[in-house]
Length: 366
Image (cartoon, rainbow, N blue to C red; front, side, top):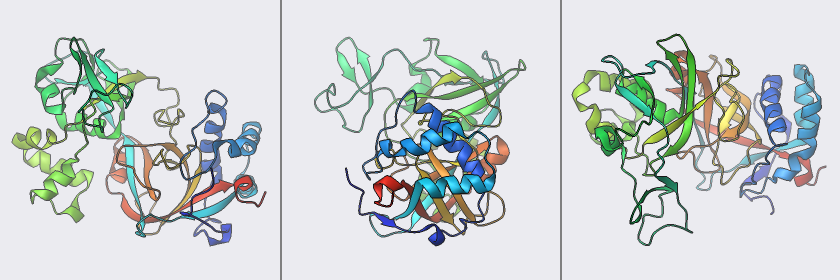
């Protein structure tokens, strides 16, 4: 596999803010992937950044446990060369933000806690072209196993109206349907249980239907101008229109199921698609069909200042993905856990230049 023509070779001197960044923070995130790949390699994305070419960098990262910032920068400059990623349509790249919500929850249903988070049902089956029934929507990656064969799984509206009641799938109960929905959007959450425990849930599966964001719906029906759509503006609209919450949320037919996960590192986020804990401000979700997990990306988004009040110019590590993250110059920045991280993630929607750090052996500059 050769490198994609969408990758345009650059030098480190071409990267805005490269010399001022804290590469040590990115190195620690990269090092977590370096240890994970000893268990299971990452697949190579179609842009041609071959996973096997990371071997020398991963091997060195596993032996260096406490570099300083200058050594971390030298590590990346030694093993990689930057290549700017061109969007296929010539448009600017785009970054958004995501986070891990933290909400109060109950282990049992009570009058105050009546909105469930559900585990994966036993009749939810993964499907692909090998077992997809004729005529079933090719988008669907999950289906329901019935006595007569596979059929489309109940959607959000049906499930919230009780389609899965009585199956014992409830992991925990929340007080607010909107909080639950945004946990579905983020794919993970920390649950501050009312019995004093801290629990974490993360993505296990989904019902399979297409995702339709409430911001898009509210914009289309003239409730919020598209340029004003943020997580905060959506929440404010729901708070002002509690009688219309179901009307809007059920337009999104996709429903997410969860599993419990350990809270092993309180300062880190959940274990995501690359099977390592996400690092606040340093992990990025990318299109996994195009990109290779573990790839470092220098992101230049000068209009984005929500993270620290300065233009966002940081080295990030590809460690997650998402159904809305499609295209070569598209990324979702992990902001961290809790309300403060949510305030950051909720307003991120900025133009950005993407620079992939390509292993030198793939560039002819080894």
